[in-house]
Figure 1 (cartoon, rainbow, N blue to C red):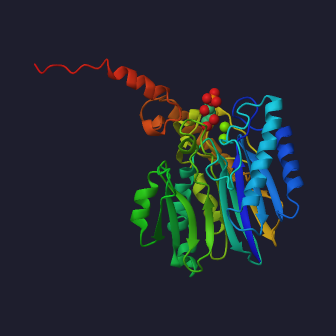
Figure 2 (figure 1 turned 90 degrees about the vertical axis):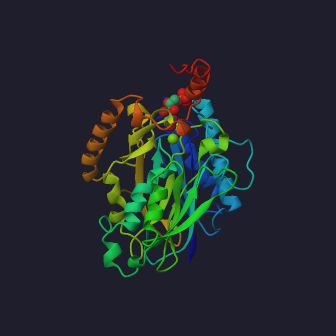
Length: 368
Ligand code: F6R
Ligand code: MG
Ligand code: MG
């Protein structure tokens, strides 16, 4: 059976700053999805990661479907009313346009979707990250899909040994989607040259070269590119089909033990380590640290099992301790050097205004 997996997420308001949505807001979103799902959805799963609410949906209408996107838009609009009524902070902040125009892409909410031929057992992972941007997944995806040091399947499985095709997006190009396709392993160094710059080049999707099937879909929207100003970090979601011709769940999860530095954290303007957290976690230290959750699911004819919490296992406690140490260490140098993002990536304009004002006060000394 052909099934489409769609995840659409938005920050439509949270308690106590940018921490987490209220229970009432989540209940409203759940009820609203249930009400609208008749004849449209096979199943759905709603969760939050930090201040972002994600709606995972299964259906048969393909990717970019108007009715499915409209459903999510209407649900988030309804949620926004509750967020406003409760006085939540940033109510409706990711709904950047006044009315729906066919597809939520470019309107604020983030989208990751893929259509698939359901396997007899269909395991997949749903990742959601907060206080960071879509490039946060570059490093883990690189390790999982090209590096046999991380992924023994690349040398053990004849299908996986045929490698993967990466579609990489230049997110700085806002006029239209600008993408490049690269094949691992032969294009490895070209791929590395792009992915090393995660604020600009972002993995959008990954495909098995053995079967042509899609295994990864990442939300690549850049909110500040859409709005032209600071509106919060993009807080990307990602779907990864696992096992058989795809990497095993453990091969996909393993790179998150690094706690790698990503763009984000306080005011979306810092370099902070990515912390794997339990489902439905909020944020805390320094409006972060950037966090990533992972729900592991299976489905049959589009019906979802209950989600298992992939980062709730005790193993990840030690990783979280390490990430805490890395976060505090980086914060000890305040705004200096590597602690803050480069000028082009800062989410607030105050600093560029300051520098512009100081320009006139610079004097070029006459040569002695
Ligand atoms: C980062 C984030 C927070 C805010 C910060 C200031 O993505 O959401 O770090 O940037 O709390 O928020 P505002 O400018 O809304 O007062
Ligand atoms: Mg927010
Ligand atoms: Mg967020």
